[in-house]
Image: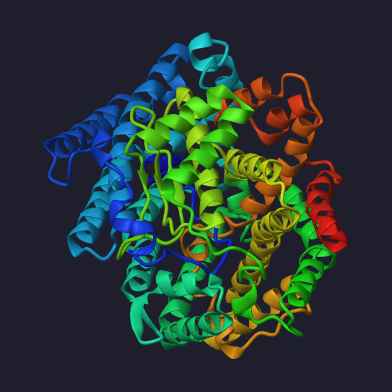
Length: 614
């Protein structure tokens, strides 16, 4: 169960806003861009502190089990609080080691020594966690009245949010022996398939215009100003994916079946229910979001892409045109130093307290900036552990979207820094709220750029770029969610052939992007490289949740709500201690209100209205 393996804390996965990945290593002088320094965690794979921490955690875990296994119901409130504190200390040691291994692997998954090290660490963490597994299981076996009596002690009352989150899994908990087997076999099950996916993607090479390059470099050419370059890149990427599609289909089918078995054992109603539970959001709230977005496809994506086709002088757009620069758009590369200044100014303008945290990230080696062979595509922020600090991975190639990605990931970083005061067990925020600070940071940066731009043509291009990003964040992610839903539902009836997965992909893309697009056959395999489907099933709706939530939140801010900044910072500092209803209430917002999602979608539609009038 998720609460029994805190060492595998989720990254903020890359926002897959485009079929785009890292640029070539020469872009933006990649050799001169900063790389992160992971020594705040460990000095290297052979750092004696790492082995000492693992040995200490293993011993502590055995002693913890000896002291508490089978005894939780007999503990007083103060004694249970002491046990949780002790448990948190062990988990943080595991989290430090796990974070270090995962960050090394993300920076270079093509290095066999790193891959071996990462796998070894995961196996050792799993072995140690087996001795801790009983704790969450026994917490869930406490009778409600007994636990409430213990919570009368102030020492335990502090841990109420943690206990709430652990015990929400009570209806889905299995027997101790079964839970232990599932945990111990995870390294040879889903984790192994995820590793196979990552290493396969990292090893693939695409040849475009006589140049052989990683997949990410080829995907980056789908944003080239030259349409013929985009077309050749799109077809070349499709050919490589097609050549490996049976492997990707096997991985997808295996993981979907693995999840189906787990969901069945745990009595989850449908494939997305376990994700919703971990996000602390009701199925009905997610259903309302998905329904609202799908209903609005015509007034959002269909309408915008028809405008884009007209601006580009095309009867139909192809898939390689979706993220094409608009006519008149400058292909100016934005230097890294300028990108930092743009984002710093935006956060400073909102609140100096936020700006101070941003400065810390931008002046310390906490960000891995340049593209590099074997590096994970996209971008993410990793909270690591409260006793260290977050790290950010980018693949910066100098476009305005990369500046927005920097703003996005720094938003995560600020959130993670502010929430760290809640401690290791209560600092993590559900995915639905984890995207709030990141998307809000993007909006701050966009508005700062828009306010400073006086040229009407450039303002229009900025606005169109923002609309595209919002459509990628909302419409595209809900289409991804719909794709996953259909794949997982059909997988229950048997294995899906690659051709059938491609049919589902084409259907959801046609529905979401609309009549402005023609899809050539190679696009049917573009589902293959998206890491969310592999690493975090049904993660993707969190982006749409966050974007619509931020649109509503930003509207409250722009209308001059008193004390907004203080309330906003308090929301980030709460980490995982509060649910979405409690966090949004100070702003007068309620995600369970059927009209809530319409407010967020209206912002996107309003931007498109402006573009139609220009």
